[in-house]
Image (cartoon, rainbow, N blue to C red; front, side):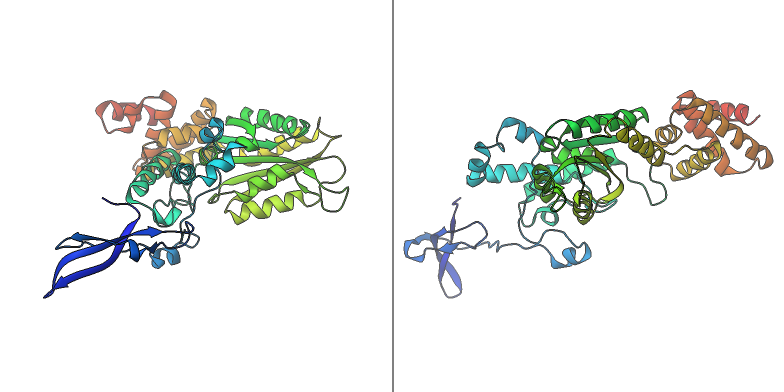
Length: 398
């Protein structure tokens, strides 16, 4: 095996190959094709050549899924463990980026993490479509990451998405004096009180894995610029915005803190997130004088919007839809939708009981009934058609 070597010429007689001249290659830059140094070619005796001649991304794939990579590229947001190691931090970061080995290793790690992010709602991309032409080994590794993300995300058909509100919230902030962080922690308290798991961190610490983990992003910044003209997000936030990967409909809330005037900060952030495919569902701006009250009101509004109260009739309808879908996590989905409130589930049980009394042969209501009983009893055996399950169901209907 020879690296950085290519064919200079082939020699043969009577249609049969006899020797191959191999010359070293020279490449000025990584984005330019290598050139064979013919004057340094060496002769090798051979009677067979198997040629693997370059590779490009199928243009049909890029046409079917606009935005996929056509040339080799890597996401700019590195996995957080690389940042923690100091590899990407100044002054070592630029040195590692200029190093061919360091840059290639970092790119592969970033590609691997990016495969966990959906490219479009319910669509994941791995391999050449994600990064541009690369190796089979990288594509296989990215495919494993994408598969794990699909299992974790549990995407459902349109109309069956989880409706119980976001479960995992990433709240990240760019804060210089501590005001933006303070506002963020107030929001995190309210979002956590709604039942979500909330992670808070500085914006510079956010990695691709964090973005992939979250159902809801809450991004905050302070603003900089002239008193009125030229007000914009802080420099650290702008740097983060430039590195955003595809966010595929990920719900995002934006907020900023300011001393005099918020300017166009939120507009700039919204345009960039929407360009990355995110869905901005809320915006708030807080002056330095209103930090004691404005974040509280905004947090209450977010909870009311993102975690709306549901009725027993909606829980019963949701149980029917989940039972018909037959997913393995139907009971968990229903419990989340009901907010884990036993009283609400019991009321939904009463709704289904009334339906079954009116229509005893309604199979949809029977399936929904078994699901509600499973959630209330935390006993998965009622989801199966066993004698014990049927007995419990009959008692439920009576």
